[in-house]
Image 1 (cartoon, helix red, strand yellow):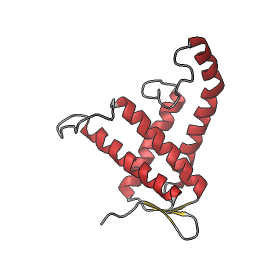
Image 2: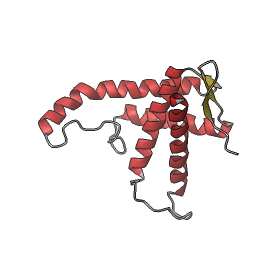
Image 3: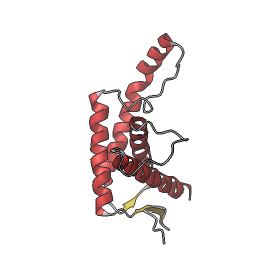
Length: 152
């Protein structure tokens, strides 16, 4: 039987039932996301800072100047919440929304780096990227449970 990792409690809070290994993985990934964001590297972050004007370089430059710092601070704040609440078994709605944002950002970066598309076939177990695909699938599943819990 499938045990949900994230579910709404009767009092309106959210139960977070992750194993120690899952918490360690999320902690490691959150720290890596923070490092990536503050490094100002662009590889893999394209989907975290989407263009507003893909066909107009001048307008896009202006758009990026107006939005980049706000998006960056929002993403870093979400990582802060995840890192601070990682050992908790109960989250409030704001905390779970931050988890949703951080987990989604992690998926976007990993999916971009793995060049994941909707029409991809299964990868072979001996593919050197197989472990990264497993992590991507885990993040997808966790994100789905977060969304379902927030929607319940």
